[in-house]
Length: 160
Length: 394
Image (tube, rainbow over all chains, first blue to last red; front, top):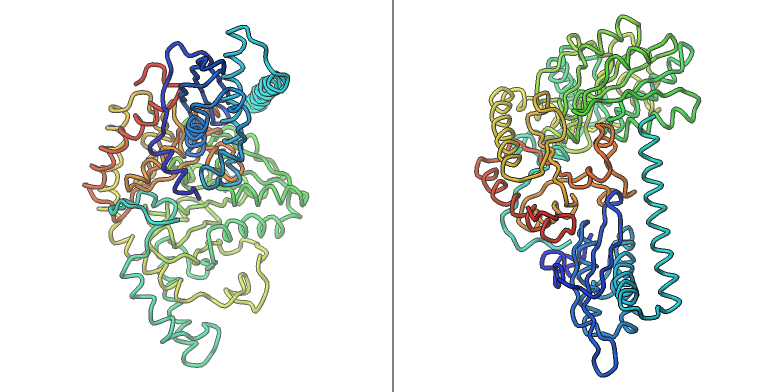
């Protein structure tokens, strides 16, 4: 069901771990759903451009969740934050030679982790956030709240 | 999927299916192209096939301590379970509409029940305790005059818990309610006596006991009214039409025969291996837990849960090292839902994620278990390093 590339990233994940004193951290996902990604970025000003010079991840989740989060770190390392924000989940899937349809949400989660890390960086450094990113952040937060609510509702139902 | 580089493959998923025993294959072969007659034909070839069929039926009935004419061969445990529920429901609908099932049944029982609900039957579910044992007091309360059938599995396929069928059978008998048990995982592993168990219907399957896929049975006590699920030429005494799959049934019977002969020693051997794995893993791996009952469990079932990691990832990590197990984690299910069995045991969704099932069998060697015990802690550790949940880095 998984491509060799997915399995390669899963077995030997690149950029695994934490960055101490990261400039931005993105935390997305939810334990009840089975996926949780933390993405850490280091941003440096190089010739007037904000470049992601280091990026690492930690993931709780399935093979696809681990592989997509590792893949996105590779794709954005060395990119400016504007370029990095343009990376789509389709590009992640392509870089992995495909994902089972039921696992596509993992690649979406990876883009969200990155967006959240960049959002966190911009907020922390008092920089203006692009409108699109602001919107994306809001929808990620809302989505997570919905999941939490649904989960709690479900837990309540179980108790009855 | 291409084959893995690791040449050594250790199959520890016997609860999913088993390899067909060589002796079983030998036994089946003549019925493909030598004695290939239709068991319904009355010429010599047909008579030969019929003899083999009836001989197989006898082996089944001796083991279950019932009469041969109470054994009906089917194509799968799924079919048997569908038939038991739907066949009893429709044959007895004048008596009542309530059917009680346990909340940890296999999907083929649960989904049959759900369908019956859409046909006007009333379905009630019995809860289980944290070890997966059905709540008898709750069952007593649910059994009313309108109840026609109770269906509780003999042992659970995921967590291996063995249910108190004998006691449930007594309660049903006292009240004149029929009892069906899905014994797919227990059949051939322990003595099953339908009289002692007080069951009216029992499901068993060939491919779980080193027989071929495509053969199963439903025991139906004489005198029990059941509608056929499959209508046709009147095979299996008019209860289950379809040209009889003689080679598979011959294999099924041979498979049971071998299981009966090896039962005592095999049971002891597997329990020893099972307990060794459970004891070692719980000791070696911090924040690991056993799902299911610690003692009242199948000799070959190990179901473990690990904090901070996800089951599918662990399964694939083990697969890379040549070990084949299964997982019921949400991520690996077609609907991305957590195992209904684990949730019924009161395990929370977020805790249920890191679960794998290791099931042992006839060809599991001591050295396979040694290898598993060497690899599993490493695999858990590796994934815990990847996980952000692992704050203590244990």
